[in-house]
Image (cartoon, rainbow, N blue to C red; front, side, top):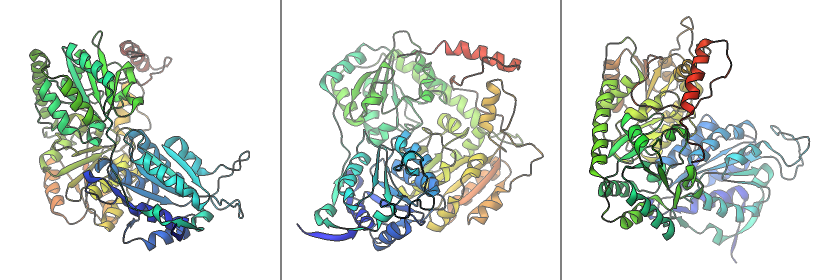
Length: 611
């Protein structure tokens, strides 16, 4: 057997460079690059190895470890999970900074390879700088924080352990059911140790997504349930995108006259203009989609994990005797809410179900009622997004301005706060993948770094990042990264002077305004000056007309632009939406809280538990 002598780090990066995406991704390298912030725990081993292979496996430098992992995750999402990136950090805070990003990827079922430095396997200098010592367990390190938020975790203490760990890692990262973050914690001394590696270990390999077909029994039962349905509704989740099933979804809905609602991850599965698309569902949903959900006697959940924002905290599907089909590649998700599971790839499942349902159409009255509700919603949405002469516009009006300026090549990126709810309802998405929201973990600070990941995956798209001042202050350093890497973004920063979304939630639960909005006496932050100091074009605009003009300038700019606009922290779109279960105190001296508790108990009575 022919061998080659390499360090653990050199072997690891050579292996990554040899992996290829499948034919659907054009046979490109599976790993588009490695994000790296070097420290004493990875600069000697991984740093030397990455330098030696930089022509085949690019290294990208960021300014914050959480942000670079967000960028890697966004790249994977924008690539339909067909390609991915890795991230390496030192031991200590560099590593733990990535734990939040790992949780985000875990929740959203997105692949990212995390390579934090770890303690010395040989323990000669024990304890080393930044080592977390456990008084009762000598095997614990800070990287154990990754265990509950990794689909696969391994601590590599010997070079040859990679022979088993790397294939296992790749099988998880590329498996549609298991997909999520993988953490390989690399002991510092082991990174630099050499081993005689079989040359076959570095042979190129293509990884195409597995497409499991449905079980015949599950398929027959799902078809029976659909044939009996008089008011069926499809919910499209992120799995529709990851399975490249958007065309299959359109064919299925059109053939059977079934209206479609979309989760945050599923939005743009159908173009907003598609006549069967009722838009967003759930807490941040449209009146059309939520009315259909409340009346549906059968819900077909395709590629969604049915979290509480989708189901209205289990109170949205209100029809007596309603049934649910869970079409999902992951059995854990397919069986939620007592659904009849249809475990399969979304595209294969929809095509098989279409064949089994030949000749079936939902009653015309149901399809027509959904279409009428859709048109009524469009009128409400147009009113919410129309410009007005208010001193400070609402989030919805800013979304309207950005939407009017957007071209067909625009991808909108967002994450936490009030904007995701407004975007989910009001953004008119076009082509699949043109709407990129991180709302599974609702992670503030994702937006700008996520925009970089989207731009890496879709360099010819115009990437528009929308975020609030609270999110900007949490994580803005990657503006400098976008400028340094030539990854142009348009960042629209809505300044409502605080956490406006949570302030509204606080009021809705009877709480006094407290600790969310900045007082009027608080010095105003000059966000435009700050963004300009990071290398971006930046300006503060006064009103919607100035914003639309600035958006046109940003589109023709040669680097990232940051456009700041003052907005109203109190106003949110009243139309659409649904109740959300947020516990209100049973006892309080405030009458507002007691009133909110009474409303809460009344709403909670509508929840369907165990189903």
